[in-house]
Length: 158
Image 1 (spheres, rainbow, N blue to C red):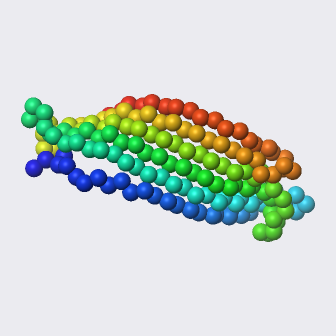
Image 2: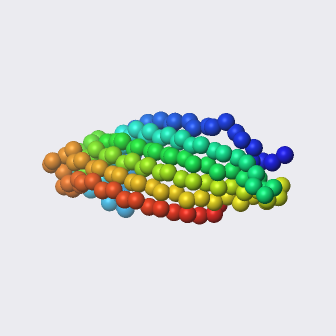
Image 3: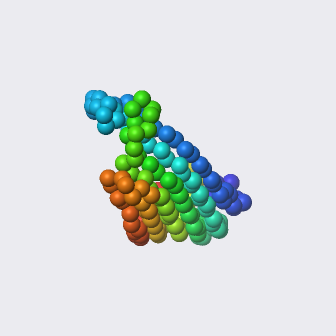
């Protein structure tokens, strides 16, 4: 019996939300009460992801194999704030932004099993990345803002 038998598709969508507030103590031994002896990082994020694909199994020249064509997506949407604090008391913001990051990927995966104990897996993948950063703090020292996108194609044996 081959391990490459057809299987029903499993394509679970995912959702994740987290709101950590990081309050580390003084940084690098600095203890400057007038400016704040620590950093406060508020990170409110929502992460959505999904995966869909089609898998076809079969045998060619007596060698079991399978091909999968699929698509994956992930979106990271959040509000990120970095500021100063003294003993967990907020002093002010250094940076505060709305963040949107997304990646969209299509792929082809090939599997061959010439022997019961030997399996080869490889594929190619094309990714598109997109990010958008919006400043939420006009009075902050740092004013990050902008958008970008990039593409990347990869192929590899697994």
